[in-house]
Image 1 (cartoon, rainbow, N blue to C red):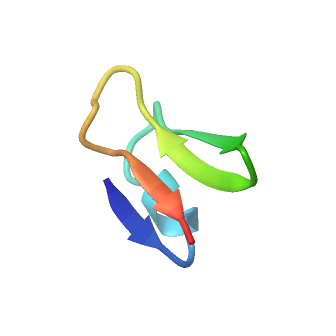
Image 2 (cartoon, rainbow, N blue to C red):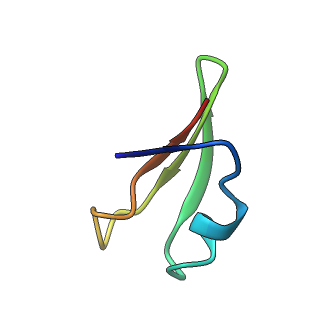
Length: 41
């Protein structure tokens, strides 16, 4: 899982990427291609 300040560019890498807020953190998750996981902060 990548940890980045800005997730906007990471979200554009794959069309199935979803932006999710959990417990005050922002995550990028992808059900079809699991390697595109990222967390902000």
